[in-house]
Amino acid sequence: MIVEKWFDKTSPVLILRDHEKGLVYDAALQAKPPSEQKRLLQEEGQPLVPLRHMLLEQHAKRQLTIQPFRFQRFLENRGEHAAIPHVRAVDFSDIHTNSRILLNELTFIGASVAQGFIDFYGIEIAGIVASYERRLRIISEENKETGQTAVYISKLSQGHVKHLSPDLQTPETAQETLRHFQKQQAANRRVATDSPSMTLTQKREDDPYEKE
Image (cartoon, rainbow, N blue to C red; front, side, top):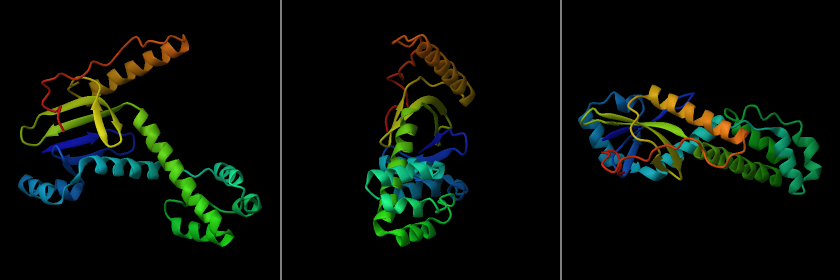
């Protein structure tokens, strides 16, 4: 069993997994003995790739802030010009707590407006997920059987994890390496060079965390 941890500025994502299945490693699961964790993973584990993608979407939903002018422009592009004055009066700030009330209010304006918002919401979520997947992330993997932990600079894409560095030992070292890489990339962009002055070494073939 491996605990996969995505480091994040707000709250980390934890997954208890093997090579095929995983569970969200929340406080309730962490409190159970290892034998029970293993049993639950075997019996209730979800396919790993869809689970990661679901967690990415949940992260995106927490990060989403509806910008009214963007939604209004979206409606204009769909020909909903008459609805715009009514939509301007709608408060979108409570999207995370009162989404049903918001949708009812938009439905009252017009069913096509409500459907437009559902489509717009999906596009915004997809955009945040795509942005998240483009960025480099620090991901650690702790082997529950051996107690060994490896820390990588990685990318998430369509539910798959790709490690772009060797094991950097600690999150602090990984963060410093990532900062250095990003600074050099920014400097390269400023001088309009095409090739980065630093690349992240690919992971060793014999790395015990290579396979999923």
